[in-house]
Length: 358
Figure 1 (cartoon, rainbow, N blue to C red):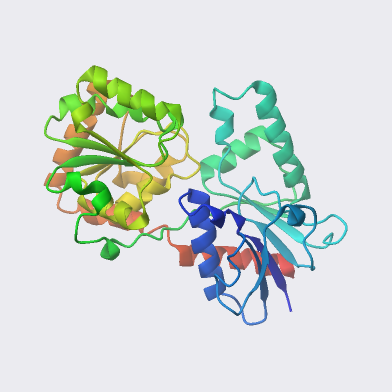
Figure 2: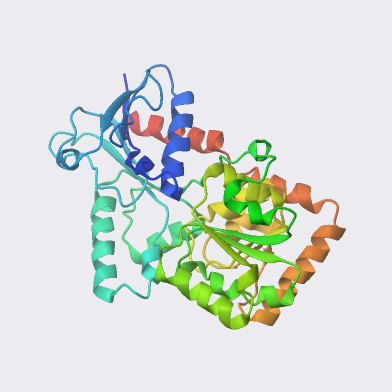
């Protein structure tokens, strides 16, 4: 009976992209599990049983980083920073499958050359042990090949992320966290407020679109968030900037459902999940052309050619006009989003698990 070990430890933070990946991918892997396979999930403390009684669980701990009991035909690390790896002695026969979502640290200006080199070296050691690699986008795969040594006998396959948002679950009533947005037109960004997200470039849009508010929804503990507030003050648009911080899933769905447009000027993305989520709601999406984002938005999104205020304002103005005039545009946006489903992602992974276990 083939056995599969899945590191879903990042479910400890369900407000993060990796936490959501671990949750929804694991749920679908259980649903599609072939009858002859056994599944062992590494989960955070207290989450034994989260995927039902028909699979097995080990809870994450410092001890488990050193030793995980059992033997497994396939061992899947769902992200490249996993510290839970098969023992080269006890699990030496396990086929390691490593998923790499991004190498965004290479773009970080606050990381020294030496720190980036150390992170690459750690990842290289994992790649050297892997039997199969997957990347979250074709862009990420190209960066991996550029900066790391992928052995000729190790496949590097692209498997996109799935979507779990359902427009039908958006609440009808305005959530209390965003009640000031009721009956107010707004432009939306969802994501961590961090320099790589480049959201300060959106503030001048409030000058160009005086009837709109700008909503930046996401964790805002980084000093960059305070910089955004200070810049809004200097521009005289602070009264139309709304930063609610991290929002729960229900509030996020409401924000997607009621925005007039979704803006995502990010500088670096392994995938860009919020772009696909907004498209699920049929919203006009305005994205940067960088890294993986054109793969996600496809021809259905509008793209900022640069980050100059006048150019960005023109892109949004023209895009909103075009979206309003083209009666087929909303369906094209939803069709693009439909390319990214967890059932399809899980099916792709199961094909690879079965191949590795042969």
